[in-house]
Amino acid sequence: MADHRDYVLGTDTSEAERLGVQHRLWSDTAFAAWHRAGVRLGSRVLDLGSGPGWTSHDIAQLVGPSGRVVGIEGSPAYIDAFRERASALGLAHASVIEGDLHELSSLLGGDAEGAFDVVYTRWVPCFLRDPATVIEQAARALKPGGRIAVQDYWGYEIMRMVPRSQAFEQIAAAAGASINETGDTGVMGKMPGMMRAAGLEVEHFAPISKAARPGDAIWDWPAIFWPNFVPRLVESGRITQATADEFADDWRRATDNPDAVMMLPPVFEAIAVKV
Image 1 (cartoon, rainbow, N blue to C red):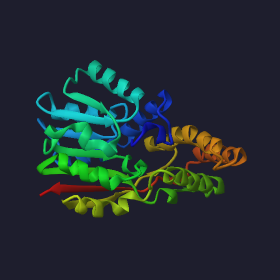
Image 2 (spheres, rainbow, N blue to C red):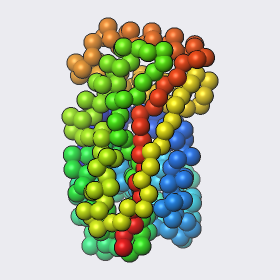
Image 3 (cartoon, rainbow, N blue to C red):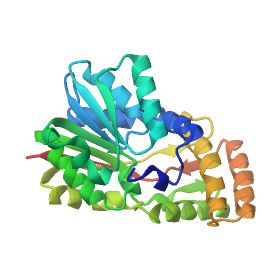
Image 4 (cartoon, rainbow, N blue to C red):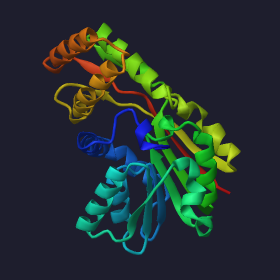
């Protein structure tokens, strides 16, 4: 994050665990992006907004000891978790740097210019106050022919549920407004332009659509997301406790309804190469 204190979901243990479940549930799309970006044995990869390291540690196992993974993270608690898990997994080639992504070039130092084969970031640019600056600095860290892969939201607030729930739609709108206070849930619509402005050539831009039904593994993603986020929306005054209670009732009914469907927030993927 730009500053972990700006992260609307917090950085406590429960959120770290939720991020781990979320990573595993979306791992098919992450591994596909790494493949398209050229991650392989010996690759040097930069993970922007690495959190507790769920992504970095998977990539570290792909690149092997001959490669290198560097995470950038603003939360001291997540940095500790990153290092502890990397040590437990024997991933000495996975490291993390504490700092603000907007100061990426300074954090990496002059020797890091052109040092990385791949830069990856997921669900991070939408939280940044100036993602274009971060993309520009990330481009400088790439070697010629290196790629940056970004997966993030475009139209977060349009997620829907059937049977239709007014409380659900109110919460979706409030969640988007909460993120947009310091970030931009429509960031991926602007990403190709940011990449071109940074001197990159866009190779791939496509939506990643997922819908969840009760009984599907992906239903677990919203099931663990709402208990963490909804109370924060109440605390911030964006929704009332009555709306939260109505939503909880609607969600329980949906979970017991085999015909229920939730359209997850639209995610887009962009991959660009440094020419």
